[in-house]
Image 1 (cartoon, rainbow, N blue to C red):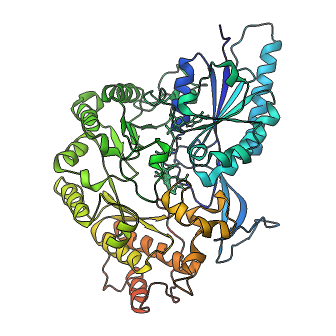
Image 2 (image 1 turned 90 degrees about the vertical axis):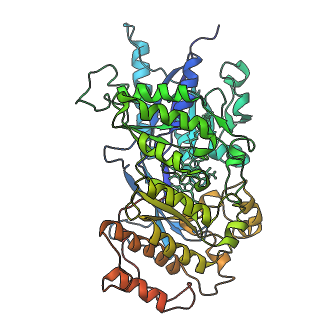
Image 3 (image 1 turned 120 degrees about the vertical axis):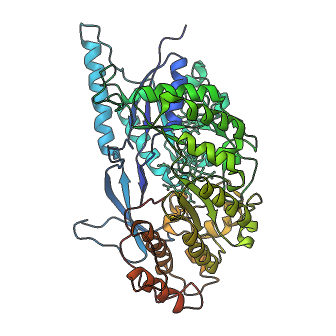
Length: 538
Ligand code: B12
């Protein structure tokens, strides 16, 4: 018989130039927690990215990174410091490692006090294991720093690292995280009760199949408030987050050249979570005061019938009145048929995000986006408008992808102008090359020639700027800043009701200046250097 094991779960901070904390629950780890509970584990969570009521996280300047480069430095003082045009400040978002260390020591102190106490008090002990979820590959350094701190405070604990980074770059994780002779296992091979595994550090790739259908263990946030009455009517029970994440399907049969879905899910198969179990989770959480549910999936509508059954149950349930559903990841336009959109509206989806990405058919083809085209985009748009979503408001939004190697900058401008004339907001997505994807492999020699490690391959650091200079000789950071700025200016129409291209307003004249002043978009004369407004930044 195995004695009860204890595991400390950690969601690391994020080192990045920007972070969007609106939906940042570590839902993979919370699902793993539910699974470990079925194995009898005693658990404690430290979520370094836990957001406040305004859904933001604290940030602290960390270093200055030069764009498209491996160079970085820390200024003597941040007071009055401003970056050069080709630099960005990298922040530590969330709880920084040095504060985490204090929290770990506090856990240790309480555990030791409890051990020495004559009374039998239930306190989380010094953990046997530390389980760390690691998401973006270019955030790997904070995982390393969390491991360093955990190791220092709990030298006897073994460490498990899982999530997207260890799935897409397992060799990198094995070598760079400071683990001790780690095992590398697939999620399906992981057995927490196996004595052999219990004594080793482990890097885990891919998902843990038995964990995937489980509800998130949000109770780990409740430690100090569990069982207390509700604070105000309808508010989540003390300690519970205001929203939760649902994953009702995984995987995608398509193989867009920049996407890692096939690697994350070990192939092109689509897995669905049975709709009744998701419905039960929604009902239970709603009764506890959680009103917002966000779907994070590889391709939401692929498990169509299952998804439709779930939202039909939600739409028809009078007890779920007032529920808000979100899908901030982008929905495949091909599958947005009229009955699907109608049901989604009835169930509580307030906004749509279309992954338009580009209007250029050649680029679509080059990225192997075989399942989408402009006709399908118009189809989805029409269906949402017919269902009552408003065209010119933030009801309908589009992602635009740019910063890719060999991109056609004219096509990016065309896409921005086109999308902005059709939907409420255009959301700039600076391209991030993801290890283990076809695009990454195609440009590997350039990436290696620059000496880039994973942290340099963050889209916001423009890793392909130098590459694209082969085509646009005088391309500069300024051109990308201008492009992003243009998108925000065009989005201003959502807040200011309308944007008249021929108007005398600042946005309109800036816009004309760009288009009139250049015959190609890698233009030099852009004056668009205003602060970007506080909007969604991905
Ligand atoms: C949610 C999401 C987003 C959100 C992020 C929200 C946020 N605030 O963090 C939004 C929409 C903003 C977003 C944006 C982007 N994203 Co994104 N996104 C995702 C998505 C759908 C889920 C990520 C996530 O949190 N997963 C949680 C995981 C870990 O949970 P899980 O799968 O249930 O976990 C299982 C296993 O991993 C394992 N496990 C998990 N943790 C642990 C821990 C231990 C110890 C163990 C043993 C096991 C384990 O067990 C679990 C149960 O089986 C993934 C695709 C995907 N399917 O994962 C893409 C993905 C991570 N995104 C990606 C990209 C490229 C981007 C963008 C950079 C797009 C761009 N511009 O090019 C942007 C930039 C984001 C940024 N802030 O820098 C890429 C990869 C990026 C990378 N290099 O790592 C992915 C993989 C998409 C893809 N298919 O290629 N994204």
